[in-house]
Length: 368
Image 1 (tube, one colour):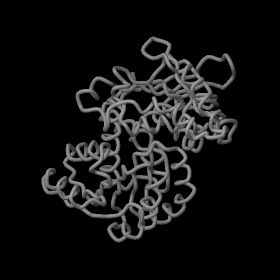
Image 2 (tube, rainbow, N blue to C red):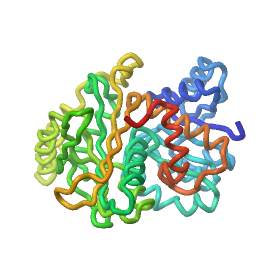
Image 3 (tube, rainbow, N blue to C red):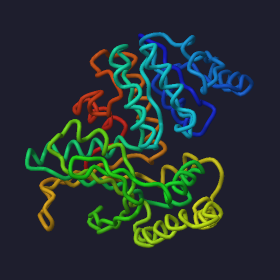
Image 4 (cartoon, helix red, strand yellow):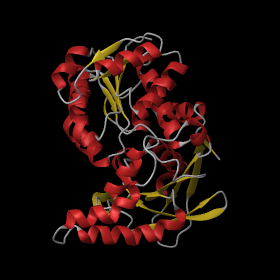
């Protein structure tokens, strides 16, 4: 290992998954956070890891701990609140940066603020490097590669099987709740546009069955047009609850409408509160093993009624397990390889399509 790997947020649910994935690879990261007692206990339980007490809200303290070429992982969200100082510290120092964000607005702003600085300092910054949204980027890139220059549109659907509602973390439920009243970004006619979440419902074929999915945000809309400039449209869908997709579309419309009424905050909270129902924390290993992930990407000319030019399906581990493994793989690669692209970049730009596909296959995310 040529450079340090620093894990910020190791005491949280996602941070714990990343830490375990790193240590299975023989990597002993430095764990970081603001609670010295919790950090010291975690470091001791993990075999005497190095640990740093830092405040994620101020970049100066982090800068003092970072060196050029270090790999800084952060799982501390919400990222719109806590993510920017961490990213600024990495970009200024020239440390590589990975986060577990699923917040597309955060990633978009991150690129605007730090892309050029990261290129100057040599920092490779790969946000949202987990189930949100590496599998979709990979599936789409493979489908577009197969489809060739005729492809003008790519639709991406995220699916999971098994007892999915029981297998959703408290953080994901909170994100879903907030997302019902926030717009979803879509690449349309060579422009980023905001549309109401769940305003579109599309059907995909998954394991021989037609399943519905509703419109959501995804970093695919930010990064794929940079690599495939011929694309007119990039749209991302969530199919975790296919039977509820049309209901959720109506539910979203109602929740969105209440935001324009007097006392809208209380009304919206009441409407979206059912989405928070569930156990605290996240699913344990036994439950995660029962809920594998499936992602599909369909490339087409974009002409209504036209047949797909190419379709790629990826299946892999549970979304949360996959997130931990992906971040650990990326961190180790950044710490040991120099053949990566600096800047705030997507997964295929950072590592190359072949390397990313091979790395994902080693984690169990494979084409089917």
